[in-house]
Length: 157
Image (tube, rainbow, N blue to C red; front, side, top):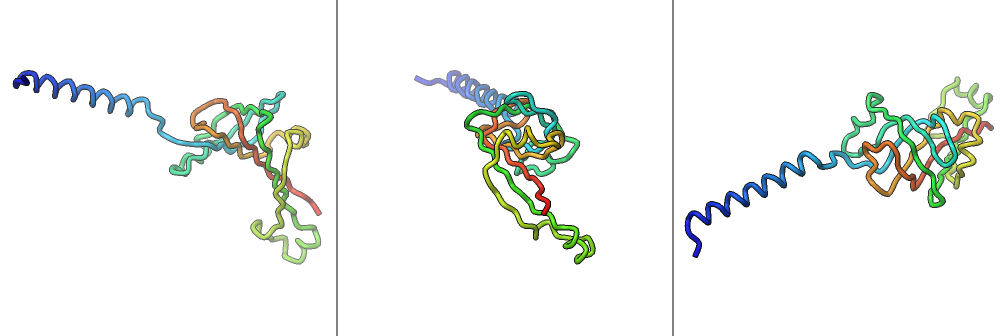
């Protein structure tokens, strides 16, 4: 039923198919997985936030290099969560006691619910650092929908 010629043809067809799948995966696979982007707000227009920053790739920390900075647009929807972290900076009197030195890790922080208005009404909106999360892989994309936007604001006592 199966002669030597048919077996050789079958093996060749399978080898070409496997080779095609391997080349396809190598050529078109997504090299990095990232669900976060960290950057500075450049501008806000309606529900679109323009950022300059880097993709967070856990397996490749070198991706956080400033040489990899990209300009992206993030769309805010009704489902986007805002996380506001308030960091309480020391007073002038407290700084005098420590010689002007303090440990950032020791500062009081409060995490709460933020809003889009917090970001748009912030006087220093240009340059505000944010961490944007998405439910999908956003690596290499120039725009995506944010599931969460986190930011830190200083509180002067």
